[in-house]
Image (cartoon, rainbow, N blue to C red):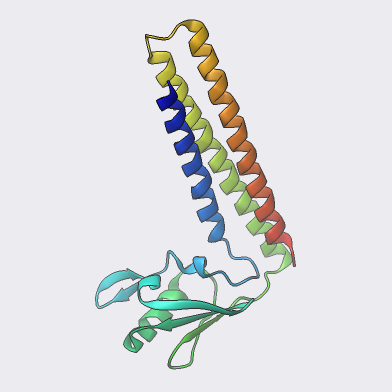
Length: 181
């Protein structure tokens, strides 16, 4: 049964990692290069991630600098950033693109905190689904007695509680970061 526990732990860890990735895309007042991870640029008719076309630096806390390796792709990168749902207005100086990150308003910070809570809830649901699948696998195992099944399910429940606590802590930390001015 240790293989069920190991697989359950790996799947719960993936839920936590996915939550962290989602949180990295939430735009706070600070410049974070990960907000551009999902931006796709039309590069010679091929949708290409911006991270494959340019270097992304953070010269100051509220500014991202996108420096394309191929200068002919500068306008395509700028267009992709404008059409993305980031709400950032890029400025093109001919060799690079500057992305200023203004501090979000109080109302926008509340919306972002709400989004973070929603992401946290989705992660908790994912962890519970992993628990459900693991419990079902244990119940289907005919080699285990009822006591062993109950013991394994209790172990899985403890692991579930531990991961839900980690999700809650990560959500609270991200909410605090979003709400900070």
